[in-house]
Amino acid sequence: MLANGVHGMTVITAVTAQNSVGVQGIWPLPPEAIRAQFRSVIDDIGVDAVKIGMLGSDETVACVAELLADLDPVVPIVVDPVLCQQARRSTHRSASSRRTSHHTVPRTPRWSLPIVTRPPC
Picture 1 (tube, rainbow, N blue to C red):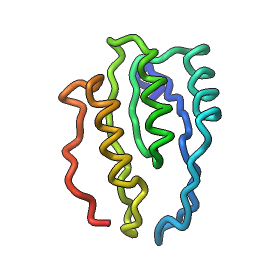
Picture 2: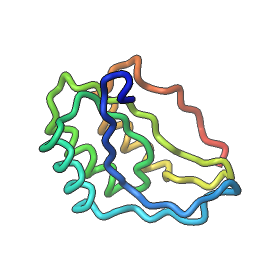
Picture 3: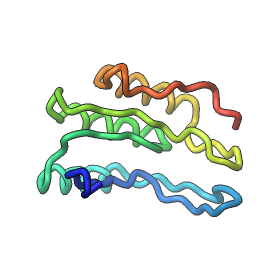
C-alpha cells in the first residue's frame, strides 16, 4: 500500500480464534474500544476511504454507523462484509447483516458494493 502512496489503518471490531480448518470463536469488542481506535486514526492521519469488513454484532453495527455519520460525506465507504468463513460458521447473523446494509449502504457508492448472496452457512 505504501508503494501506492497510501497508509492503511485498522479498527478492530472483533477478535477471532481461527486456523486453516475454521473459526473456533468470535468475540466482538465493546463499542468503547471501537470508538477509541477510530478516534485514534481520525485524530492522527485522517481518513480518505473506509472499507468495512466483519462487524459481528448488532451493537458493533450501530457503533460503526454512528462513527461513519461523523465522517465527511465525500469519504468513500466500501462495504465488504464477512458473513461466513470457509468452515461455514456464520460470522454475522442475518439481522446484523440487514442492519449493516441499512446503516452503511446509503453512504456507500453504488460501485463499491459487492454482490452478496445468501451465505452457505
